[in-house]
Picture 1 (cartoon, one colour):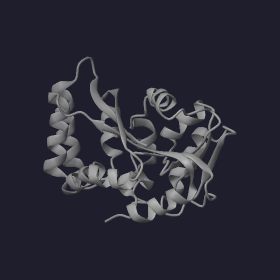
Picture 2 (spheres, one colour):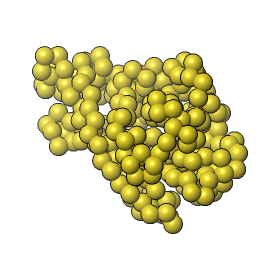
Picture 3 (cartoon, one colour):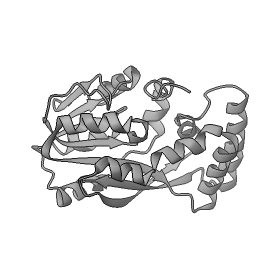
Length: 248
């Protein structure tokens, strides 16, 4: 299996262009529930290209984007490097290279399922201030419409790794145990993407489990092309997401 820290190296361009970002309502919820202010110091762990980091930079927070993948770090720098409040760190969830008790809020966007939970919890407790908070967040595709149900069916049938990848993300017992003894709260926000064929293809190819080339790649894209044309309206299909927040 590909090293999780390297598996997105050849997908960065697709990731930037086609992955969904996080709704600004995330900040509103954190302001209300944990009294997030612009003075809080944030660490985005597994920051990737910086989609979640962007929300906190816009909120005025000094934000450490901790990312082990060089290509992702470079993309984050290209996108947000002009922001004086951004500090990009070559580190991982298990070894962040951040100082002891320096962080008010640790966040992880669509990344926690790649972490070693035992070593990561030790590291989070080391860098987090005693009254600090943790946010784990995912954009979860809604599969209750015919188009997205069809997309899901193709992935289940054609990509052996897909099911294991999906289950890793939402082991609620693991998340709850990770955040223990802090009490876990959950919030769900609506999110969406409208995609033409090229964007839909790029969104599909941005997934870590999707082969980048070869016979399976061609066969899956052929089925996705048929699915797109079956459900497109005015050249667009809609991906609906739930943005799910687990936080202390």
